[in-house]
Amino acid sequence: MENRKIIHIDMDAFYASIEQRDHPEWRGKPLIIGGSPEERGVVSTCSYEARVFGIHSAMPTKTAVRLCPDGIFQPVDMPKYKRVSGRIQDILHRFSDRVEPVSIDEAYLDVTENAQKQPSATLVARAIQRAIYEETMLTASAGVSYNKFLAKIASDLHKPCGLTVITPKNATRFLEQLPIEKFHGIGRATAGRLKGMGVKCGGDLKKFEREALIGLFGKNGSYYYDIVRGIDLRPVETEYERKSYGREITFPHDLDNLDEIVEHVRRLSGRVAQLLAREGLAGRTVTLKVRYENFQTVTRSMSVTVPVGEGRVIAAIAEALLKRTEAGARQVRLLGVTMSNFPTGAEQNAPIQLEFDFDAAGS
Image 1 (cartoon, rainbow, N blue to C red):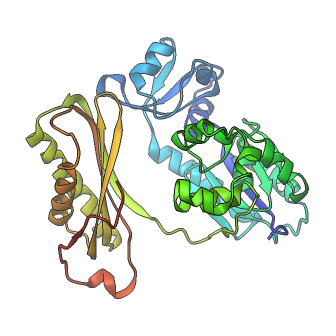
Image 2 (cartoon, rainbow, N blue to C red; image 1 turned 60 degrees about the vertical axis):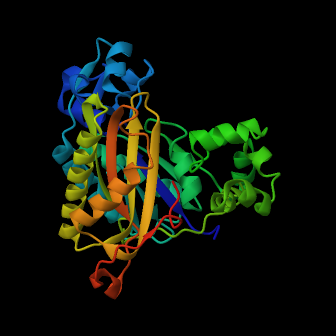
């Protein structure tokens, strides 16, 4: 599959860049987009000027205020960001009919065959960056390679407005020298575990056989074995199928009253049920997310044998999962309920049957 030509487009500080474009007085200044510090909000994104203060996405806004008290703090304007994202998607589709959006501000394109009949994926990427800037006054970084994994890593290497190409010829050396924490798909905890085993870069990881990695990390071990060798056969999928629907809430004050926590779980379950009803979906796996007062986050999952979508059923499962946490005994900062594992076809219309399979989903 090394003859494929894949581009990953990643907008630079998307929300913040839109606001700086629309508010010239904010350009060149630390701008933080996210929830209110008074309401226990978190940072959604921030400008590059704010990042030098150590601010990053998912950070509590209160912490961001402490790090950068003179920063400009603004709420998320999602309708505006979605409109801009739609314009960018239109631009991408002018270059290829094989476009896979993966979030509001990034997408993969397969340009092996493209509308411009341009044999150079690098030149296509430059043309895309130029078109995005000319039509939206925003910058994008691009990664070019022969598969999605490498294109994704490449787009992140030289931000903002960077263009990085990883060819089949230089991929092996690049991956062997890449720090283990830079591998897309290897999270912070796994990277720490690997470093504890003496694995600091791709070359170290490459010394492990597939079976050894599977023994250490389960099915993820097989993924690690492939990516360090530049193997990623995933196609660019033009029809995106959402894998989960969820809702969560961060509380203004930590909760330790179990009855109050249960009531919030029920409300979240009802909101998830509304999302499922709107899409005509039912799922098999409910996941409960609990973040304690010290920011430790745990998830508990349960699968049922028949797809469910009713709020009362989702709530019953979520409440059962809540008993497998320390909620109530410990203060809770955030709660979330998510439904996933959606079947297709006639199973969606099957009758509800509560048969809890505690072993079917991990925690």
